[in-house]
Image: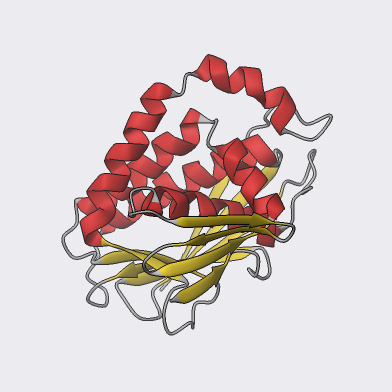
Length: 229
């Protein structure tokens, strides 16, 4: 059983892995998946750490269809990166993972002073208290759920994408964890249902208790895309 940690990302970056024959992913799939993921990260940022920009560096290297390194950067004006990159990307990763394992049979969950330990048939994941708290906050924002649904709907539409994974380095031999193609529809549909159940008014009511003092109002975030061939 593989043990996962989502608190070891470096240099404020995360790597997305699109599994399949090298270079076979459709350009529209790639664009829609990027937009969905970026919107999800922006919505999480607005919930737990407002005032940050996201820069996306697209690299056509590494195993699989594509691997994409994403960097979070601070705005030139206003806001603070109150949450470090390893925790921020840990929240993003854990949110996706949480949706992936939700229907796994009888996950074993243990909570102790070091955090939450979730054991499923394939993975054991160690979730620190900061990442767990941030994930629970992110669940209250319907925009996060909507964007995750769009990401996996885009991936499902391209038969060349065999799996979707997250890892820390563009050179990792395999992702930290991967979601097989068979689960794409389930995640897309579940996220869409959750979005319907989470009203914007409920989100607004909880915002004041979710953000650090003085950061209750979300600031606009921006996505910058740079492509290297």
